[in-house]
Amino acid sequence: MSRKAVRQPKTVLESPMEQETGARTAAFRLLITRAEPIEPPTLAEVMGISPDRVAALIDRLDHAGRIRRDSAGRLVGSAGLSVTPDRHEIELEGRQFWTWCAYDILGIFGALRASGRALSPSPSHRAVIEVGFVEGRPQPSTAVLFRPNAELMECCDNVYADWCPNSNLFASRKLAEAWAAEHHLSGEVLNLEEAADIATQGWEPLTTGLALKGDRRFHAGRADSERL
Image (cartoon, rainbow, N blue to C red; front, side):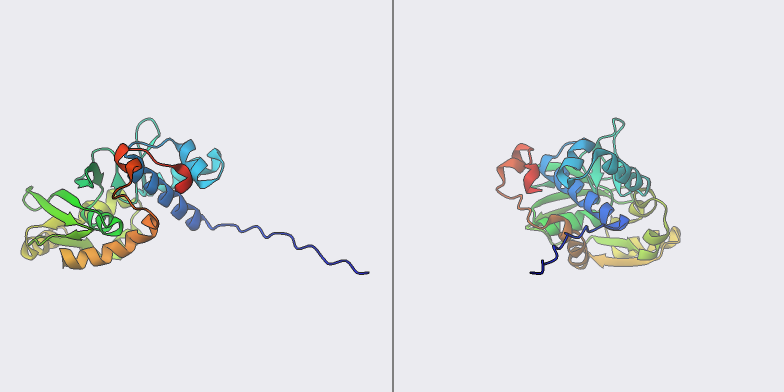
């Protein structure tokens, strides 16, 4: 009697880009739920990989400006979200965070369907622009967003340092266009509704399954690693 061959399970090897996307996503979810710096071993546990492997991922992402660390080596920022003071401040469902650029504000609020407000300094006249959000949508405002062309992100060495400072809110389209021309930047000026539609799509893959509103762990600053 012939014996059936036993199929061996296939080992699926993630590409470096997939590994980095996984690390950024896991870090973002930990930061948004805990609202405090994250130790690298915690990220390794959530991702189910070795501490050495996650350390290498963090090094690459930090060098590329896609993850931020503090002086102690803890993760304080990922995918535009920061738990320590940064360029733009947001109050999201009663919790304080910061973002790397104005575009991040719209993506994070939109993907999480969150309510709150953002305080964003405009580089043209140094005034702080306040935008309210209800269930992820920006409230009526005359403010606009300048978003640099994608080519700048693709060619820059560090997203945080090179691309993010150029994505800002302005009180008017005229101010945004004048500032972009002065700094020789190519991009588009969007009203907040348009910008929110685009940005929300970018952050939705990071927030799938997260429901912060009414989540006692979020409001207590704690997260269940297994859920992440």
